[in-house]
Image (cartoon, rainbow, N blue to C red; front, side, top):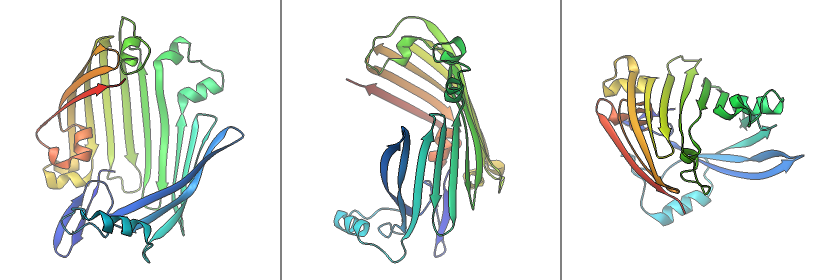
Amino acid sequence: MTGRTFTIGEDGYFDPYGRVLQDDLCVALFSVFHVPVDVGFIRTRVTADIDETGVRDTDSVAAITHFFIPSSGDEYAFYFNNCLFTCLDLNMILSDAFSSFSPRLGIPALLRVTGLTSADSGFGRIFKKGDLWGHFSEDETLLGADFEISDYPAGRASAVQEKPGASGFGGGISVRGEYELQEQAYSSCRVEAGAGTSLIALTLAGSYLRDPLLEPYGMADGIATGGRLSGEIYPYRGLVFSGSVGLNFIDDIKFMTGAAGHLVYRISVIFRI
């Protein structure tokens, strides 16, 4: 989620990561009849090395000691995750009571498994993503979907990969949405459309976010609608330049709540050998 507010004494603070706790995961990875299985446990504890200002203690010795020495307030949960038939992911966390269950269904993989389409067919080649997922816990019931259809030239896809690209022109569109059922206070949606060649690509995106945590930052009824324009240049295989400008776009609002109401610029360079 986007974070939460908490109070220490009479002072209020905002935690953008959604928790004032620390989770440590210890998991074993193996396969049973070619089905990947992850089994382990999660330890949840209060981060005592964070003071009232939200700043982590810089004493590395104290932090390491705090990590390895158990605390009476620690809570443990059983963790299980597996991927069935490359199209269904199951993630479950169990503690003293039910904690969470998170299934995910990949439609393109399901179509290939059932033989209805293939990665080489016209539709199978452009249907890049089609995920349906849910997250069910005592406090939250979240449903979501993520779809992408695109036919960009090979040069764009391989710009940071080893194989050389090819010339051409293509485009794509993606849609992602989430809706919380229990409190019905959180929902989000984003739509992106772009086009490009093997050397350059432009993307225009719009987003909607409803979250009560946005109200203290000037968003009426906790609702933010925004957009972003971004571009990428691939001058050479393994090298990508990208930049964007956005206003109240969901990526900026969710992780930098103070970004509300003004332009946010992003510039990045990716170089891979």
